Image (tube, rainbow, N blue to C red):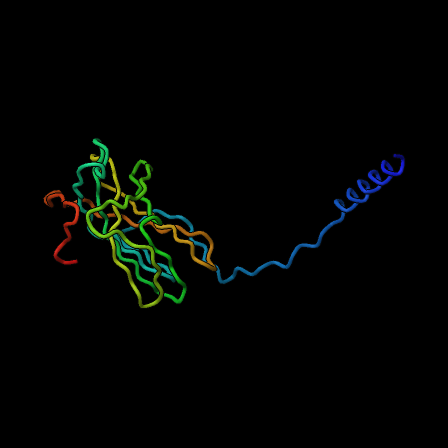
Length: 184
């Protein structure tokens, strides 16, 4: 028993001595090529940086009925977007990478039950672009939003792109599910 106690005490003493040993820091990884993208307020319907351009186009109200309809105090808007690749870096896209924010800072996540085809998961690189719609259920009285895009870009720090969504056209009638613009 005495040997066991001596062994445990010796092991504990050695492990504590090891904790006090100063470790040399690992070689610093150079992040000189990483672009830091501070979060800034949107300045218009277009965001552009070295890797991609995001454009928010004229939104429309999407009329849904039944179980896919928004709650009574909400309306569904559909925001058409275009994401264009500007570099060799892959920029992932998809409806679930976007959030809509009102002027009070309330955020709304997308729904896949819009009127047009939802922006499918994909990616863009230089020379490629993708167009699609992202639908959101928002309060009826709000008509100003920022669209927030937070893709994970390999080789870059976390970044956030913000664009202003144009105000709804009051003269435009609501679209029904499955109804597409003739221009699409």
